[in-house]
Amino acid sequence: MAHTAPRTAIRTQRRATRPRRTGRRHPLVATLMALPLAALLLLVFDGWETVATQASSVGVMLGR
Image (cartoon, rainbow, N blue to C red; front, side, top):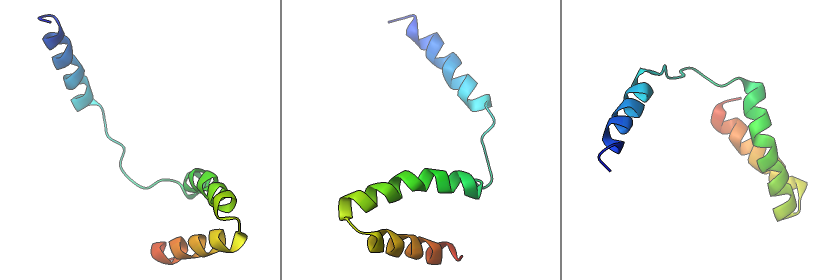
C-alpha cells in the first residue's frame, strides 16, 4: 500500500500537464456518432417517422 501513493501522484501530474481539446467537433464526426443512435431508434420504435422527427428536433435545437 505504501508504494501506491507516489505512482498515483505521478499519474495525476501527467493528467494535469496533458493539453485539453477545445473547440467544436467536425460535423462529419458528429454525424457518424449519431447514426448508430438513429438506427437504434428506427429498430426500437419501428418507424422512420420517429427518427425523422427526432432528427428535425435536433436540427432546430442546433439552429440549422
